[in-house]
Image 1 (cartoon, rainbow, N blue to C red):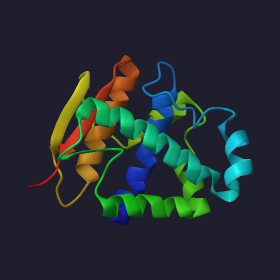
Image 2: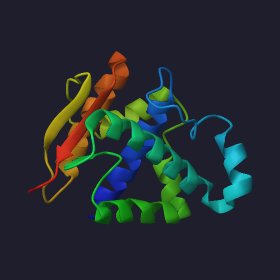
Image 3: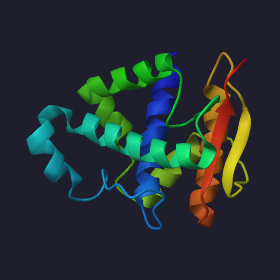
Image 4: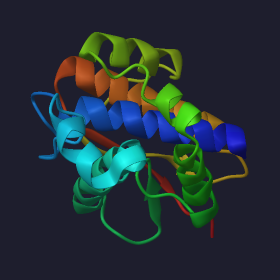
Length: 165
């Protein structure tokens, strides 16, 4: 599960960063050039956690608005044990910095996102990628593929999973 948590957290950082770039998918600027200057005095050593949580909430709201709330899960809303696993990685400063290593440019973020994908052709709007199963590895790689293609084509896609019944 820690592998899935690490991939989940890294994808959130990458997609969160790219989603804030022009044309922005959501209106937050947690990964902007001046964000750390504002966050560090308030949050100190946990400024990276504040960035992560901020973009997580901004992206979650937009995804929920487009997908709906109910028996669906998406990159920014997963079952509690995955949420806790991803959050615990941010508590470790070295691991947190590794998660943020590729967000200094759009090109680097997209290159890293590409390394985590199963190539997909994105469609505008919500896209079901299957049901939540035992592992998140394949669904996360599929979602990453949709996001990467959407960022490259300048469209907005919202891949989601259905909860197992």
